[in-house]
Length: 624
Image (cartoon, rainbow, N blue to C red):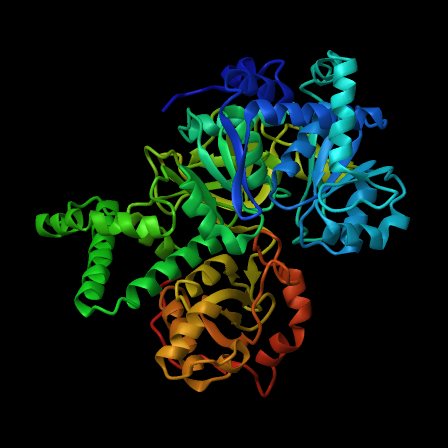
């Protein structure tokens, strides 16, 4: 793997901006496809040359309306081509783009628009426009609204009109676009990403062009990616992970991006794109695993079904032995070799048959999920990062991954552990700061330039880091025992019946849990037990399913110390989704929301006559 120092990266990106990355890529491969998307039932495409023309026209149309250096532009759109074109138009006009999560309520959009003082807004369709209209009278800085699809009201401008105006300006002033983007400097802001607010009001993370170019060079070198990729853009573009990979990453390399605006259509998009690089949050990988396991279990031919299950089990044994530094028995290894066509077919069912690098990021992932995908020939490369680091801070190099860790420091990035184990980072990927929040910036980035991540970590002798927990989320029981909720929650989700889990116990006398059933798996379980057509709310109360969940919790308790064991649990009756209050758009749990919304259920588990379900079985605890 190429070793780069901070000085090497500094020299490579000197003078570069997002605009120069785009210009170089479009000039290098103007006729190559840059993006594809579904419209009118067919896949459409756009080359890099045509992509640049649209950015040019949108940029000039924006500037003609007074948008320019130092201003912010809001984008309310899903993963569609116009989202990236609007972003780049804002940037090439000298401004910074602010993408908005699709699930935000009008009042939350109002907060972001007013806090950023956005002067323009790009809106995908009438559904998004309705959210803006609900608070339009209170958006004191907004001057122009551009509607991408649909009939624009008289106070807004259509997307086509914006592009048409820009094309006319370009014909009259051929050098206007070049003059605009060449005036953009590496220290200028390129984007403002608002954190999803798990611990309070969203904070606007400021990124300079240098942040983007520096982290692109560092991160993609570490991930051993040196040629254009095929990508599927489906995670929110308001989140740093998707922004870094499918937007800035595609500009850096010249990738082909397939857009999937509806996550329910991810599987068809994967089968169309056959991505060579794919990023999934843990919940996506969990669902993929559940789908494969369910598909194998549904094989009507008993011999084929048992052979497939046996092959996966054998491959997992080989993985476990190799991780332990042992050579698998020749007969076992030979059986796994013979099963490779089966594993290729399983990967193909996900559309990941050509995937060279599969990433898991944004939250801890269960070891069981790691082992499953390694067993079928798709090892997951775990990456740790955060908005404040322009994306990645560590990653497992694909040529030398270490399962169960988040890998080693990115080139040029310094990492250290604070006295309490907090992971600290310093480098060109550290954000400029929080917008309009100097005190919070100073709390996060100290005087020596170290960013305090809030994550508790450990590091092994080879320099591979592991994330232990969030500093502010550690449970301290009434008995003074420190408990990692993330560890317990990960262990609970090993059982496919459990879709979401939250460990409770801070300042309480014991640990309890709130549990959400995985709808698809619970439905399959119900059919297998003669309970077809039972809604999730009814299944959550069914005695046999409660016993199945209890068994899963008992299994969790065998892996932790006595103080960490879950004594009671409650099964909630409705699913949590990105549209619900409990999860962020990237499927992270909003613990403060959960604590407040389910206060009655939580208190009931600790009452004199307790609610929920008791974990009656006594298990042998690990020492500690």
